[in-house]
Length: 255
Image (cartoon, rainbow, N blue to C red; front, side, top):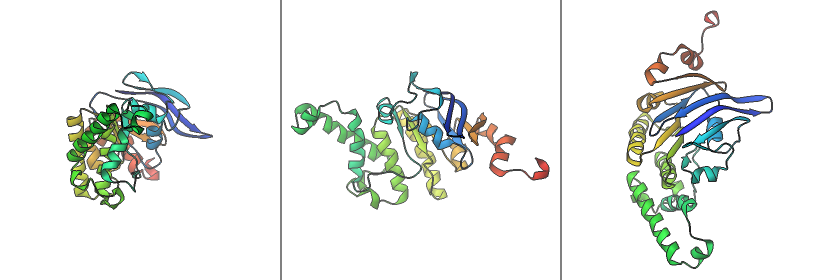
């Protein structure tokens, strides 16, 4: 589903990501982990078109998307959430999910302005899709509430719901468990697995909660200072000395 081949992102003299190669197979859950500043979000930003890589190329479903605009990548079936929640805070829960689907509209601006039958049919489908997604995420009863009034965990769920409403084939989650307590993180683990199975999605996530990562990942990639230092199953990553050193450091007399 996703191929990242020899991708580098350089900002002046700083190499944020260096020669990264990775892949994600269909309906896998793959984690990208590493210490703060390792280059994880930069990698996400290249994959989703926010940054154009300095070198290398990226393919989604075997189609080259290197340097493609984020909206075009979203139309091709890639959706993402953000490390810092970015909801439309003044809009209702329902409107947040409906507006996300506008990238799928085929009606012209004239048809929508005049409320022609084709637009009305598409609009009805958008609301039906919103109901399906919000119900699955347990947010349908809160559909009329202003999104900023929701508890933190519900806002995280709403951001995922909004991404799902775009009908993606691949979902990128940037620290979905950030700010959650252990019980909320455990619930999120089951939710992400359920999303993969229910919506038949491929998922790539960045996450610092290692319990979440180890519980749900088929494979894990580890970055440190922009360099890929390990790839493997959760068991292999837990036993990898380079990963342990990157996270915990080593005593000077051991280095």
